[in-house]
Each structure stands twice: as structure tokens, then as C-alpha cells.
Amino acid sequence: MIRKLLVRLLTAFQLAFVYRFRSVGRNIRLDRGLFVIPGRVSLGDNVFIGRHSFLDGDIEIGNGVMLAASVAIVGGDHAFRTVGQPLFASPREHWNKTVIQDDAWIGHGAIILNGLTIGRGAMVAAGSVVTRDVPPYAVVGGNPARVISSRFDPAQQAEHERLLATLRG
Image: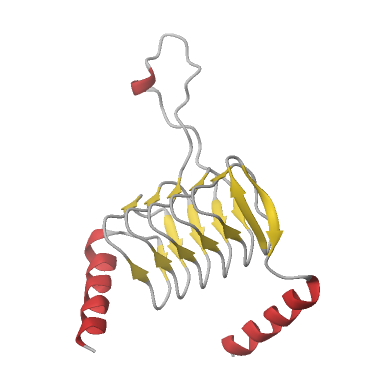
């Protein structure tokens, strides 16, 4: 009971004074040592973000999403093709919106590149480098990440969606 209260107090402190999210849903759980670009990340309801995760860019995280420890969602890269401009002084390229849809799970140490969509219910395996959009309910892994399997067959997916809708009310 006291532990739950302390976790809620720590989360409230983090949300109010440390990480300045663009918007925040209900029941958010943040671990320690996050890097978040202020005002650029939106969180849905029931989101967990693991320790030492790195959120750099225009990012929208849906409801029921879990990010394990050390997940990196990276924004636009430096413009590196300007002749006579040293790399350290190169401006940033445009940030494209990165979306992690509802019910997704991103494994430990995964890297998600700028401007991608991780589909509803998808799973990204630990250590994966996601270089293209992930379809809904796909399980992806590797470098670059590729579809390994699906969480559900079409009938199971429909039943899962029906049951989630009853939970939402």
C-alpha cells in the first residue's frame, strides 16, 4: 500500500516537474532516467515507459502501450550532406510523427526510427531496429526488424478487439 502510494507520488512529480509531455492520459507509470523532448511526446492511458528510454521526436503513444527499458524512439537525423559544414554543426532534419498505436509492446533496447507507425497490438522484440512501419498485431524482430509472426489469427484478432471494447465500456 505504501509502495503504491510512493510510486504514484514519484510519477506525479515526474509528470509535473521533470518530463514535460505534450499530453498525458491516466494511469501512467514512468521508470527512472528517461530522456524526453519537452512538449513533443503524447501519452495515452495505461502507459508504461521503462528505465533509460529515449524519446526524441514528435511521438504519439496510444493506450495500453508498454515500452521496456532502454527503448529508443529517435527523431530526425542531422543534415549531413552540406559541403563545408562540420557534422557537429549540422542542423536537424524535419521530425516526422512516430506513432505507437494501442496495445503495443516494445521490447528492451529496441530502436524505432523517425516517422514510423507501430500498429495496434504489435510486438517489437528486444534489441530490434525498426526501419519501416509495423502492421497491426505483427511480431517483429531483428536488425532491420522483419515480421516473424502474428499475435493472433484473424478470428482471434476479432475476438481480442471485441473483448477490449467491452473493457473500455
